[in-house]
Length: 177
Image 1 (cartoon, rainbow, N blue to C red):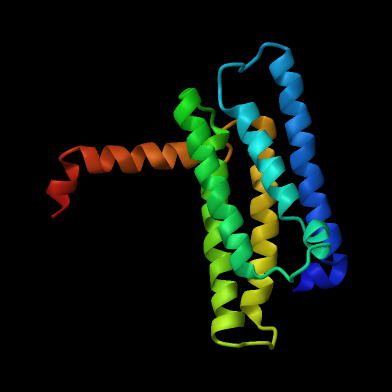
Image 2: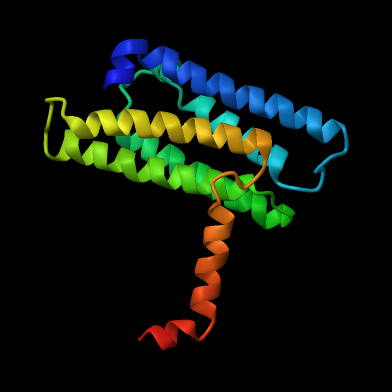
């Protein structure tokens, strides 16, 4: 909880929401230049800004019930489904889609673990996992923003994915056994 103690929940969530909004504006600009027009890039950035805006701390602060980690798990799951639906209709994807789906899935797993720790096990004392959760979710969110802006395979996820797919498609797997 080091980051939240230093910055507070509102400023971290506002920074991430603002970053996704800026990535969306940048992709509108790129779209208007007729670059990457027939890809999922602008739709993906729109889905991300809507998702993060609707699940923001400030907006949930105004709600009639207090939000739990399970709500954020559902938000991440709905966002992943929305990205897949966008991919289904557009078919021509960019490098950022894999980063978004991977980041949202990791965030989903971490948030589910936080929900289990706090609401199932009833743990109310901060421990190392809470700090890991806060830092990891913040870093993953920023990596997703960078992926939307640069739209390159800067961490090598596509290379890793292609090597894993080729490993399972070839007979090399049978040679290992």
